[in-house]
Image (tube, rainbow, N blue to C red; front, side):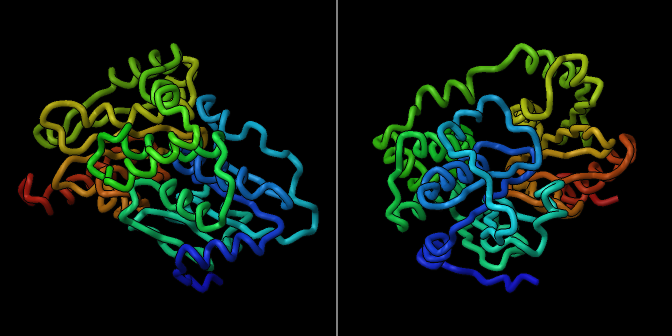
Length: 329
């Protein structure tokens, strides 16, 4: 069982220095922060070690550059690798990887205040805008050579988790570290264009279908959209392309909570929530076994479509009542 020991940067560096075989785990429905951290660490620690990055879901094409040049030599059979979860707040976010690695995670590096402390050792800084900020400082602690590829990975993580430095979680440290990464060769303009200004035709088709499903609740305080498996098939898109779609409902005037329900192949639904002050997205998702940040969080609902919508709306209502934006029934 996990000892749930909180550690500092120096202790985390020592653990990684001593490890010879390292597996990095990312969370399901991967974004630029979890992937950027995993690939940055793998790139930095590859020399003299066996390293491997595992993701429970398909990695979107816009992130494929992160693994470029990484040795593909697998972890030797029969070895007991040092297992590191990056940007993972809860063991349930590992998807299918949970079956293999539950109670085997040696280190978790994360910035979510809702972290469940499931690893043997945890490096946690909730005040950081992105886990990539911690990983950058960890690499400095390790004395690692931060190449332009590593700089790209970490810059992507920070930029994506701060919404291109627009979200309220953005700090002076976020800007300072991003500037240092640019100085180390990160392609800031090119990466921001890829992640924030470029969309595939299949994504545009999917977004059109999803926005047609838009419904308002609680006198317009909540906007909810659906993405079904049929929509993926009709548009030619897939879940790895849906990073930006979760923010669309919250962009509507008067909406305090935007919700996106994405159907999984097994019929369950992945909910992504985005909120405005004073609503807490993590509190809403926490009622349903999920978590995340105050303004962005998620959870999985293993119910058919009508029931999934009902339980999500009930959790949203409870938070609206708590914030006194609607009256209690």
